[in-house]
Length: 260
Ligand SMILES: Nc1ncnc2c1ncn2[C@@H]1O[C@H](COP(=O)(O)OP(=O)(O)O)[C@@H](O)[C@H]1O
Ligand SMILES: [Mg+2]
Image (cartoon, rainbow, N blue to C red; front, side, top):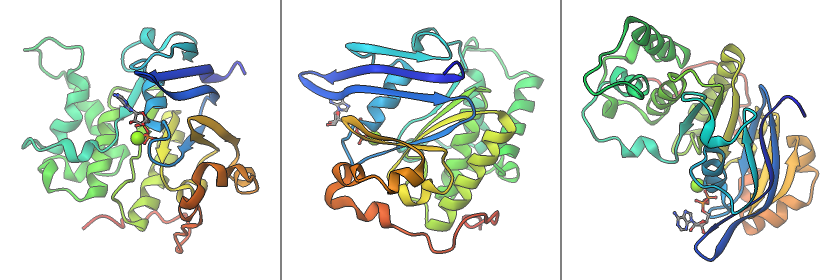
């Protein structure tokens, strides 16, 4: 328990009169990859916002790195909000997108230091797109955009990565490559990762634990136990096809499926 990086205890969250999260208890241990799965509207993004401290619970407690989310030191959490790739229409280079992470906390006219530039370069290398640093962000493929946004999220040098449906819009091969990259990031940077996903089938191959959420946590444990557990049907109902969705080519590919 002492190695828990994130702890939610009996957390209740509401928007207006609607209860969105009901009595949610969850721990994420250091170095773990947890995926939160559940149908649309089940509260997954809200759960990440509660961990970030953006949406405090009206009952229960959230603890991140041993304290309140609002008091976590700057840069401790790298956050990739849902659908952020589409939100970028500004004509900026890949380098500039990642550089945004290094401007946070600087004065308006302050420039990037040599150390900032080194961190940006290392972040681009970590997600294997260093060769694309001068490219226009808008010209990248979906998978490359997601990598650039992950580079931005890790350029704050976080201990925790929170990713909200990071693989949406990627084809199956690009998805598997993306997940493999997350595994190596976790190992090389000692990250703890919480990832919201729609696709239990794909994430089950790489995550340590799954949490099935529909207002409440219906299951929290290993993917193997999850498949043996009937509560999946409670959560997904007629959307069970998400679970059976099989990416036939298996895991372990380090190819560049989404690269030109
Ligand atoms: N800012 C908000 N104001 C009011 N209701 C919201 C807000 N954000 C989310 N909700 C509601 O909370 C529920 C869960 O949303 P969300 O956490 O985004 O689910 P998911 O990410 O699982 O699709 C939905 O019914 C949604 O309409
Ligand atoms: Mg969401």
